[in-house]
Length: 91
Image (cartoon, rainbow, N blue to C red; front, side):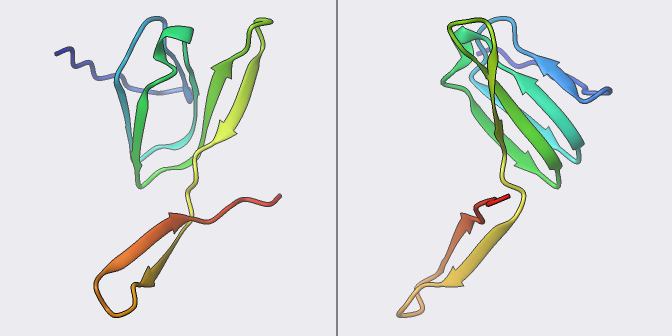
């Protein structure tokens, strides 16, 4: 198992090979450029905002996808726990 810690100072992270997981904690503003080998990555974030994932296209450009930073939690009925889902950005 490989484990690497990367500090993001200027808000950009580029994955050059394969990584199974990217963890983002207490970060405001970051862009994650994925490699074609890392398209099955899991991204875990906490206490962070303004995060975007850039996915390579076949023409060399990237498609940009925001990571949700706002969530809605509702009580399951009958009261059996909670369900949390991201709030969709419509802007």
